[in-house]
Length: 369
Image (cartoon, rainbow, N blue to C red; front, side, top):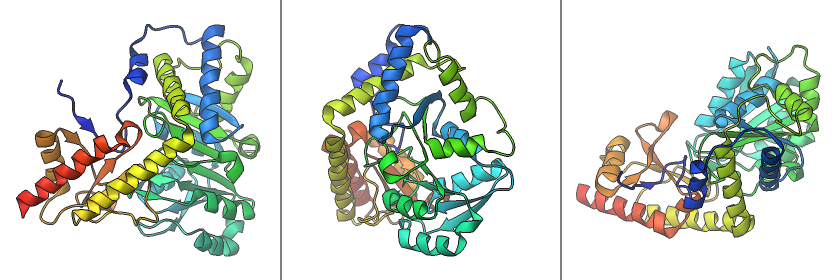
């Protein structure tokens, strides 16, 4: 199969030594040897999340992790404040509603970061209506990075529980769950952590557990129930700390990806993504193209770009793949067909990856003029 440059917002290009772990012989997902390896992986991911709180690996996507948290902490009829400025903020609201909660969206225009001061003003008048606030850190539909550290400070001021969807940010952007006062967060294996898709990662602190324990009604479901996860983690700690068949080789691949991050150094990895993100956006703007986020608000690992004049995003995507062997993604939501998305994380956060994208776009635009 012809090798193509994978520059979508995830899954991302994976290092060969990480991918090799998917091809090692299978072993049982239980037993002392395996459990020790599993806990080693948990401890490594906790360091990157910046937490000492309970952390779970579960088989599933990032949405499985979101379902697990929202389904466990939101009760029927409860009002939840969802801070929304993109497709995945709206998705959180949709999931809240699916669990029969009431999602009240505090909205900011797509392409703009949420304002902590505006949120503070809103909560000053409305905080008694809510007990929980939810937000996306990097929304890949817009390429915007929301200031979660500052938002967490505001939410903490009013004593509310904060849940953060950090699927795209953990591993490439500063994130300190405990220090910032985040009560629950989720991520997944296939983006900033540099591993194959398949693992949902969930961290919850004591405040979140208190909410779960004091529910009026038990959560529905079993597979994505945090109380179930904790029960198995406690009762089967030494043998099989979960009630499911764990994706053994995915955990091995994640462990190797985490060790690669440690070898590079998390701060150095974040700096690399910052530098490449800035370099790529400057190159895109030099072509006369407009990015979805301002430089101040831009995520460092995914860029949304509005289409060149006279071209649809699908046409551009097809040309890049067929003529240049580069794979990018279409816009989402209100940007569908109007913009395209380029992920530049993990191996993609290098000039060897972003320069071919810039050069290909330059050639395509020249041909259209």
